[in-house]
Length: 104
Image (tube, rainbow, N blue to C red):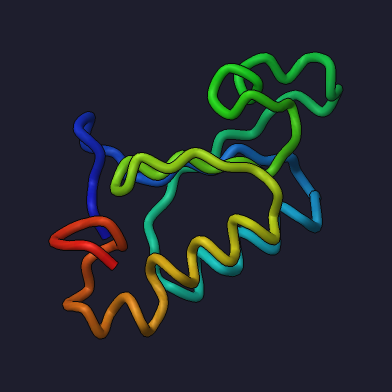
């Protein structure tokens, strides 16, 4: 998919090892052939300062999508966002993420 300004993937996923909610998001990203960077975070909830800085919460999974400017957490919300933004309906609009190239 697209790259960030630094040359890496435009989507960053903050996650824990062996977290079923994180794996749900990974599957959605893979199902849509999206490049993403994984950032594994501290297992101790109170030590997840990096996640708190980016999303306002310490919960994972959390994503930052530089394509659309979206930052969010909660696996169900993220999977829904990925489907709406990068799913079949979005591809019917020319493969652009929602918010690029016109209103929806």
